[in-house]
Image 1 (cartoon, one colour):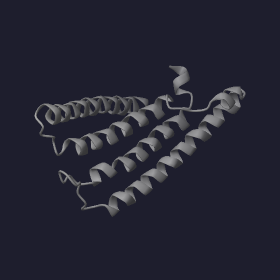
Image 2 (tube, helix red, strand yellow):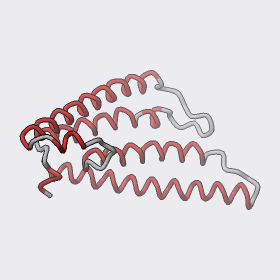
Image 3 (cartoon, helix red, strand yellow):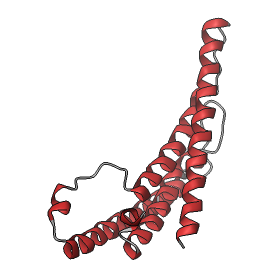
Length: 156
């Protein structure tokens, strides 16, 4: 199972890098077109916002899996080993519950906005809002992995 999650993580990192590069190219084109040719692009900001949203989802989910996100571990680190082990599992369960809620709420929001389009280029707005349930699913998956193998990072 760890290999599958490692592949998912590598794909997420690759997509985040690709999305960031595309976003930089698009925004660079916007600057050149606006200031060099006095003809701003009408679509660049919407596409950059869409890419940025998905890059944040991919990056944050990867950070949750690697435990590289911001967390307060002063109290957890002070606990004895057996207690820390169970506390880390409880935290992972809470993160998983948060992921379930984000998935549920995000799915409902996507359903409410079905058929809406973006203002400038008219892409389906669900592409933007789908990042919430997708992020929730990733949180559930990665927290599930942490619950069944809470000390994964310590063994690497």
